Length: 463
Ligand code: BG6
Image (cartoon, rainbow, N blue to C red):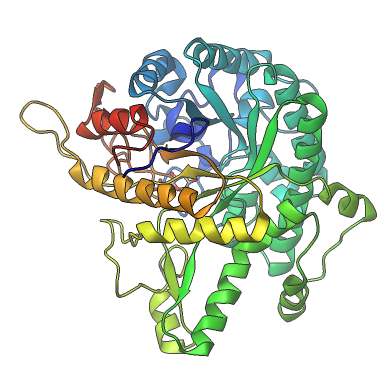
């Protein structure tokens, strides 16, 4: 494209601790909610006994191999690397009096490594995991007490790492609790709507308290929210479908509305009345919520449609986000509909709505890769997907949208969140490990590695 992204644009990739680190009980780490979900976010919850296989116990062994991996990110030209801290390395049970020094020391080393290469870390405080003990003993975020535990953890992280980490996110895909209450909020899967929304309220308050703590402890820092960008179109121009799409978009925009504006949007009052939900909101909560995020971040993989027709709605049941398939779009091997223009639409929509800088912190294609005879993955399908999406980011910037950066999901192959598979790969770097845990864990750049390097070096001009 005959356009260069702004010089300040941050280019990179994103990972999450539980999908890469492994070493799930090393150096005093406690068990997290992810550690008891060996089959992925939607799979059965398994209380751990010795000898259970969970691919995430080793994952890609980023815990030990991060110097090699970060060197490869640097070779691609990354100016930013999004990663998460495992809360359980810092507070193994969540309600501990003192933080675990060995966990803090691990992230010290990691951030020092990034600093060596001048790569800006973007750090998520909670990415699809919380201490299992908090889920077990307190029913997770259903308990108001968890707000205090999270705030304490956030303050420890800001105080310790704030000299090197200036960019933070609170909860990954905070709206996921609507789809998976255990992963999102440590709730029982059969929780009532009352419990679900009360837990969400506690998370929103905790997020705002973390924002305040960040502003106090890291005056030159920036902290954002993170939403699963579940863009919904009306299936047809029937006003019933249009209305339905608006309502479904409100379901997830609600989170950003609270985090960016500092109060509950009016449409939620009707929703709560319809669901029979009555929230316990204290004056202190209302005050806390006023501390709003500095920027908005989101993941974007696919779009979907909504319809007022019950027959169409029935068809969507069973897929993760209950989205109706768009007849104009193709889908990935996992049935995720591919819609690059949707990213431009979404960026414009969020900019119009919030007028705060935006950060695309996840986007990518999960695919089954094959090594060719030379042992290299020729992943043109991934290059095409990413090129098309980044092109639309460039278009949105030209539309006038303030975009801080782009971190593709899983720059190095990692364990899938939804299915706990290694074979659903996103990376520019191939990792030799299969779904059963066989493999040397060796890292090999794919064709897309060199493509991304070229795109970054040209600041988007080569898209
Ligand atoms: C996002 C999550 O929902 O999607 C990541 O924040 C996840 O943790 C990514 O890995 C891709 O999903 P999956 O299921 O293909 O790993």
